[in-house]
Amino acid sequence: MICAAMLKRKGVLCGFDVQGHSGSAACGRDIVCAAVSSAVYMAANTLTEVCGCHADIHQADGALCVTVAEADTDKAQHLLQGLQLHLKELAAQYPQFIQIQQTEV
Image (cartoon, rainbow, N blue to C red; front, side):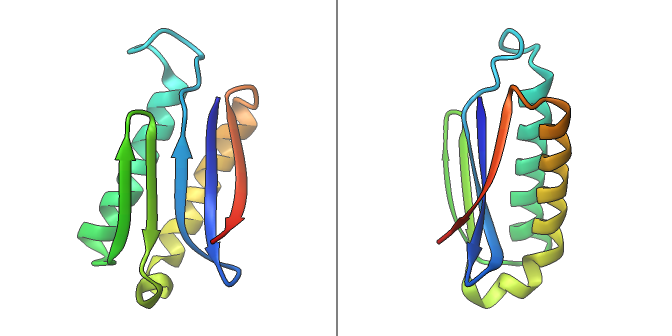
């Protein structure tokens, strides 16, 4: 199961923490993992490299956590809202493989 937490600071999106593997297919053929991985890496790279946001990033096998610096939260809103929408749509299509929650940090 992929567990995705949309992180909020004072009620405002400030990042995401995505962990796990969907297990919907064999490694290398798992379209659910591929879709989620592609979305979160695109979001992380766009936040830091395109939008210029400072962020705390932690990466491990099957996990990526990005928390945008408080000073850059406003800059990150549209992208984080887009990621949240994308993940919600994937979870609606594959509810047995993706769980989404919101977490206050």
